Length: 45
Image: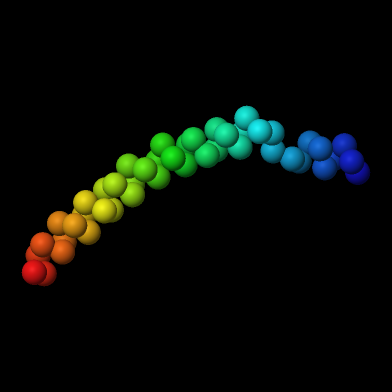
C-alpha cells in the first residue's frame, strides 16, 4: 500500500508547473475582468 501512495503523490515539479500554468492563465484573466468592471462602472456614473 505504501508504494501505491507514493506513486499517487504529486511530485514537486508537477505542482510547480501546475501553479505556473494557473498563473499564466489567471493573471491575464483577472486583469481583463478588472478592466471590464472598470469600464462598466463608467457607464453607470
